[in-house]
Length: 566
Ligand code: C2O
Image (tube, rainbow, N blue to C red; front, side):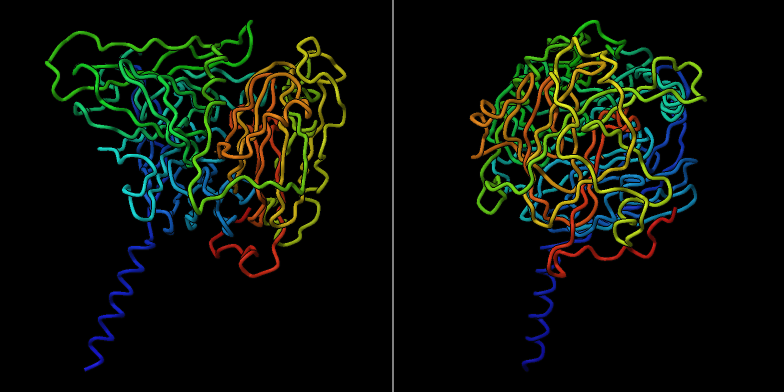
């Protein structure tokens, strides 16, 4: 008699654990597909033939398994941008940092758990410039579902991926720039959910549409998947309430304009309470460098919000008034007004610091190579603390770290810049003594669980601009930001040690600085780099080597059996 009851209890326990933590499994076939845009045929690399690629929906606590099959002619790797990858550094994805690429014809299964994070993230190729078209949303719901949001449950949720479009092959664009040592070509258009919008040639039908019902609230999960451009985003006749950025909840912040740097995400509530009609949503570039400007993509992408109850009309939808391309005050206002939402049980800013770093970064030059005939003044480069990051070619950093392979990297990434000068003084922009940088693969080693504080200081060398710095493997708290040179005495008074915003990508103000803090609670190799793709091969990056902790629970396990070989 006791047996059936025992069995029932077992079944219930099993069902219970399944709803607690599920396995979310996808197969990504990466391959070249033909598309037609702006009346031109193009071949792009995409996942499952889709642009943007498939959206991954998961709940906090789930396990994600993605089988990546590389049917493209390029080396491939996929990064799960913002996923903490606790003890799964092997699945992080950056090419030659945590793995060798998946060669054409090969495959690799990424497997990781989603622990202690909720909100909007995304995935993208992390090799060459392929993320231009190899990307998609990764959305993490609370374990208990949308009813557990710390804001009123929306009627519907809508992923909005902002992208950049090239009429040329993006890999060729990058290779040409690297071969000449010069700036790459600019993009030809921007996109909303892969669509250009009807302000572009031949694109009337190629416009994203969002149908809304009057009076309902929508949660837009906006992702800047563009390669080299920060973007302003607005919606005519509507305003937003920001409730999260980079998968970290914020104190609700009302605004009618959003700004996102490449890599960043914003979750914003929109109430459909305008007179029922049609309205444009639009995105265009925020250019953070002062004039005279380099040529930039000055086009605008649009989508159309359509009220279901609106009368049919052939009139053009209302267009939002976009900020000027160079409206740094508006961008700065947005970036610095956000604060984190304190939620019981979620991480708060650590108050004790173990490692203090001061890291300057920006552009520079390295000597021209003999195979760069058009290069005369030195090839463009970028650096952090005057080290221009060089990717290893034989073995990934993580494998070298795990197996103790010598000669792949050194542990001498400096805690301070080699020279203190007036970092943001534009008169020093072309100072030859300051411009030259040298290459190296230098890492910063930190102890497990150490709290690291970094002052990120932009320089004015060659040019001044806002660089979005992204840290893999951790969320960090943004304590303060400002323009000019960082000055500890004044800056420390503005530190938010109560409810700072938590991010994985910080748009460091143009000609300015930001202070971030994180706890190195995840053993492995973690890349930190500029998320403007053009600056990555130039060397605007470094990596942390985080040691194992004292227990099996804080020790990086070995790589999976199908781990790509170099
Ligand atoms: Cu979203 Cu290392 O990148």
